[in-house]
Image 1: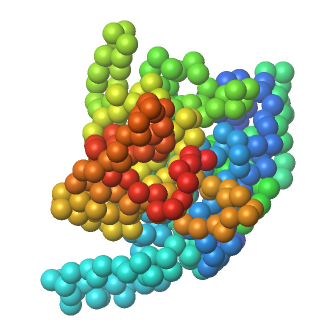
Image 2: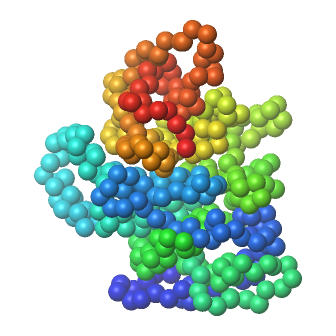
Image 3: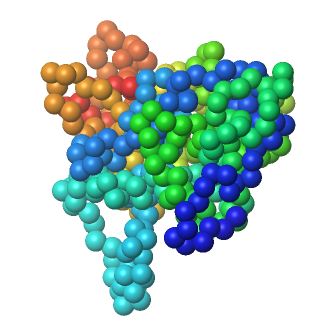
Length: 398
C-alpha cells in the first residue's frame, strides 16, 4: 500500500482482518483466541513526559508488564533523538557533508546534551513516527512491514472460537514495502498512537507481531513456542517478545549463534550484533550465557534487565564503542522512569564508569553479592572491575 501525499487515509483503506488471522494473532500473543484483553494493554498510549522538561525524551511508563515492552520501544525513540536525522534538516546536512568531509564531528558539551534530552513537542512527534517505523521494519526484516489500526466496525462476525475484545476484530492492515511508503500512514494515525489511555501500545505490539509473521516467530521461539508472548495472568512479557522488539529476532535465548542449553539440545541465540545491546543482572539465570553480540551493540544504547525490570543505559556519543580509549572513563544515563520521593527533587540519573579499574572497596562484614546493586552487576558483565559512581543518586532499578 502506498499513500498519496496529502490525502487523508481512513482505517478502512487497509485490509480487513479475517477471523482466522485474528484467532492466530490472539493465540500467539495472549495464548488463546478466547482470552479477554486487559486494560493494561488496551488503555496505554505512547505518551511522552512534558516537552522541554526533565525526561522529555522518555515515555511515561506504567507499573505493570507493559513497562518492559515500552522500555524496549524507548530504545528506538532514543536512537532517533540522539543519532537520527531530522527529515527537515537532512538536505542541509547532506550539503554540509559534501564540503566538510574531513571535518570531525564536534563533541557535545554537557549543556548541549541536557538540552538535547529535553526535546520540543515537534521532535517528540518525529521520535514516535521514526521509532515506530524503525521497530516495525526491524521485525519485518527490512521490507513489507505491517501497521494495523482499528476501524469503527467489526471486520467479521465472531463465532464461538473467538472472544470479542472490541479492538482485534476491528483491525485493518496496511502492508507497505518500505518505510517511505508507510510513513504517511503512521503520520495519519499518529494521534491514535499517542492518545493517553488509547490503543497505541496494543496496535504497535500487534503490528510488530504481524510484520514478523507467525511462522517465523514460532520457528525462532523454538522450545518456548507454547508460551504466549504476553502472559496476561502472570503479567509477564516473554523473553522472546522483548528480544523480537530489541533485535528483530524472537529467540528466547541470549547467547551467540548456537549453543547447548541445560545439556538439553542445541538452541539458537542471537545471530550477529544488534543496534541495541542488553545487559543482565547477576541473579538472572541467563546471566552467564549472555553473548558478546548483545554486550557490544552498534550504538551505545543497552537495555538492562535487573530483577525482572527493564531499564535503559545510554551514552550520547555514537563513537563510544569504536575505541578502547573512549571507554576508559565515561558517563551513562540511566532511564527506568524512576518515581523519586515527593520530597526529593527529580534529576537525571548519571552513572560514571571508570573501566581502568577501581571498584569500591569491600565493606568488612558484608557479603559483596548481597550489597552490590543489581544494575552494577549488569554493568560489570560488560566492563569488568570498573569503578561505578552513581553521582549522589541512591542506586535503584525501578
